[in-house]
Structure formats: structure tokens, C-alpha cells
Image 1 (cartoon, rainbow, N blue to C red):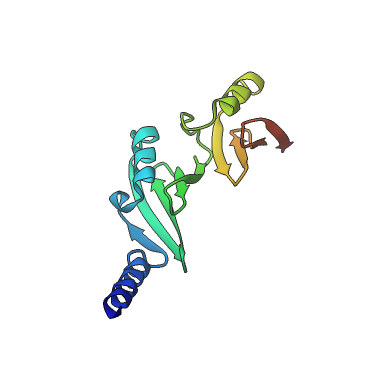
Image 2 (cartoon, rainbow, N blue to C red):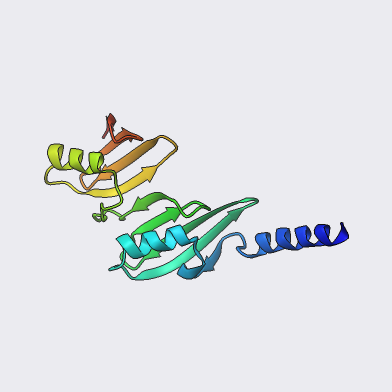
Amino acid sequence: MKKHILTFVAVLFLSFTSCAKDDLTQLEQLPVKAQEFVKTYFSDYNVSYVFCDKEFVDVDYKVRFDDGTEIEFNAKGEWTDVSGNKNCIPTGFILKEITDFVEAHHKDMCITDIEKDFNRFTIELNDYLEIEFNSKGKLVSYDD
């Protein structure tokens, strides 16, 4: 029993020290899912830094590229926000329904930011127009 308690305490301690609050880290230390996302959709971008933010038991990651583009990931390595810092972002990871909508209704515009919440996607176009979609990619609202 003592051995189990010591093991538990050691694992708990390591989980709190593996990523200190507001800590710079390496791309290889991101969850595998996040690493694959960066390699798949942002392979032509140069990583400036990788940042780990730990709030008690919650961990978030931010990858910033030389051009100012940023990707935020949750602890599972799922993207939650991709911001091009007013530049167009790759769209291969965005629901086809959303990219089709932008192409059909905002032909000369590009997506510069996308945020994923529990059941919503909010995009911003390069004309600063914000459009909200549900989790299936159906239009919910415009906000200019």
C-alpha cells in the first residue's frame, strides 16, 4: 500500500513539474495530436516558440510562428484557436462546409482566424468580418 501511495505522489509531482506555469517548451513536448496538426497543416511555417500554460490541473499550449501566426491547443492536443495575425491561414483542417460557405459568399476574402468552442466555430475574414457556425458548419450569425 505504501508503494502505491508513493507512486501516486511521484506521478502527481511529475505532472505538476513537467510543465511549469507559463513555460517555454519544445514542439516535441506537445501532445502527439498537436505535433501531427502542426506538421500536417503548418509544415512550411517556422516555429518561433512553443509555450505551455498550466493552470492547476489544466494545460494549454501555444505555438507561435515567425510570421505571427499562433495555434492554441488544449491538453489533448486538439486545436482551439488558430490566428494568422491578420494573415490568411491554411484551411485544410477547417470543416468543408465552412470553407465552401466562405468561397461562395465571400469569394475574395480569406480566413485569418478560427476559434473552436464546444459546439461553435467562429471565423474572422481578412475584412474583419466575424462569422459564427455551429459544430456541423451551418451558419449561425454574422458580426461585423
